[in-house]
Amino acid sequence: MYTLVLGNRNLSSWSLRPYLAMRATGAPFDEVTIQLDQPDSKAAILKHSPAGKVPVLKITESGRTTTVWDSLAICETLAERHPEARLWPEHAAARAEARATAAEMHSGFPDVREQLTMNFARRLPKPELREATKAQIARIIEAWEHALGRHNGEFLFEHFSIADCMYAPVVSRFLTYGIETPPIKTYCERMMALPAMQDWMTAAKAEVEKGWE
Ligand SMILES: N[C@@H](CCC(=O)N[C@@H](CS)C(=O)NCC(=O)O)C(=O)O
Image (cartoon, rainbow, N blue to C red; front, side):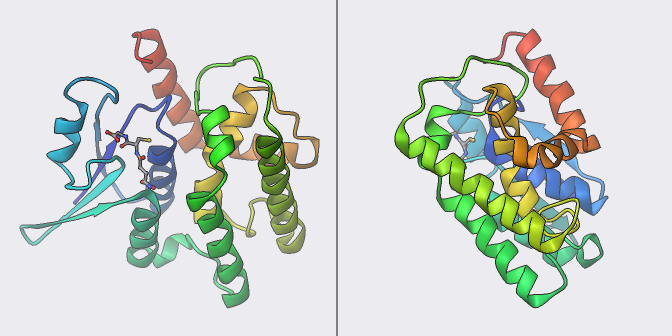
């Protein structure tokens, strides 16, 4: 019933987010992988979504396919369809904060995204960080510490939620570029140990080995 269209595991941070949410539902799904930055990539994506970007979720029910594009919209759709997965916190106040935290990532931190591009399977030297990048890293750590401290849980909002999905690529970026994260080290380790993150790593390594960028 579900098909998730994804970009490169090693590079596509936007793909990782709904993949984690999909895995958290426990629902079966098919995966389609489109290698990005190839001459035919755009045409391949457009076969699945008029927006021309991955990720895309296709839901086929009663002979009709609904297409959902954009990582956050896919996560929201999965949360709505799988309430048992508790992809948002139950408590309204925590849910509001989790949404704000997820949205802040979805629309923000441009310098982190640009200077520390996701390269999931690789370990790379840390570039000379701009002041804006440093400030955004500090803000991310502040948001994580706030959430972890306030909800006293293993994940940002007690149990695994869309907020964790949205920041999973940042966890991997910190690891790739050796960004020291003592206050939230345990959280990063817990995220990387998730079976879905491990599976993503296996696939990302396989891409790197076969020469995908
Ligand atoms: N805001 C979108 C961003 C999606 C996005 O930029 N995807 C990139 C890959 S990570 C893409 O499809 N690039 C291919 C292209 O633009 O042709 C989301 O949250 O899903």
